[in-house]
Image (cartoon, rainbow, N blue to C red; front, side, top):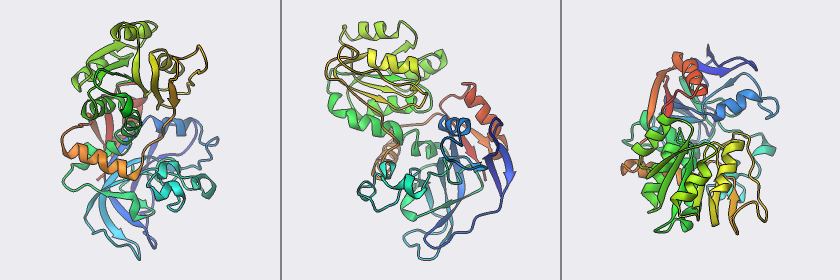
Length: 344
C-alpha cells in the first residue's frame, strides 16, 4: 500500500510502498477515507531523536476511515462502518483514561504508547491499524473528508475553550491568536458555545479575512501594536479569555499582554514560546495553562456540533501522491484552513 513517511532528518516526507498491516487480537484495520495534515508534524520532523521517535514514520494524526477488518475478539463494530480516529492513545486503565482523558494518560510515556502519526504509524496511508476499538468514534452520515480535521483541529480548540467557558459570560471578550487551521475552528466554537465578543489576530490578511468570514467580530493584525489595539477595543480592560493557537514567543507575549484581571489564557500552539507570569508581568489573578488535545467524550461532542452545523472546517484536498505538496504549502503558509489527504 502507499503511505506518506518521514524517513530522514532534513528531508521532506515521501510517498512510499509499505506492507498492508494485519489486525491482531483486539485491533481494527481501517481503509483510510481521509487524513489531515498538521503543523505538529513539523515538530516531529524537526526533532525525532529528541522526541524518541523512530524512523521511518508514517505521518497523519488526524484520521477517518471505514472498517476493513476486525481482529479477534473485537465487537461493537461492523465492516464498512465509517469512523473517526481518536488520536491521543493511552493505556486505557489509569484514572485519567478511565475518564476518557487519554490525552492526559499518566502511563503512556512509560509504556511507549504514542499517537498515530506522532510515533505510531499514522493515517496518511491507504490503511491504518488502530490498536483498540475504543479509539474509534462513529461518523454516521458525516462526510469524513470535511470532518476528519475535527479529530485535532476541532477537538484541541474545543477542549481549550470548554475550560474557559465560565469566563465567557455575556459582555465578555475572547481573543483568538492565529486564524489558521485550529484558530478558524476555534472562532466558530466560541460563537457556538458562548456570547463572547471574538477578536481574531493574525499576521496574514487572508487569514484575517477568513476569521471574519467564520464569525470573528473584529480582526486585528498580530504585530507590535496588537496589544494596544485589543486594549482599545475592550475599553482598556483586556480579554477574559485568550487562546494562542500559534505559541511562538511573539504571540505568547501578546496573549499575556491582552489578558484581563482573572482571565484564562490558553497557550495551545507549539511554536516554542513561553508565557511570563508573576506579579506585575500579567494581570492580577490571570491563569495560564497549556492544554493538550482533548478527551474521547469531547470528540463525540465536537462531532455532534458538526452534525448541528455549528462548525465547518475550511479544507483543501490532495491525493496521497500530492501529500508532499500539501506539506510544502502548509510550511509556506499557503493553506487556507486545513489540508486533507484522500488516499483511496
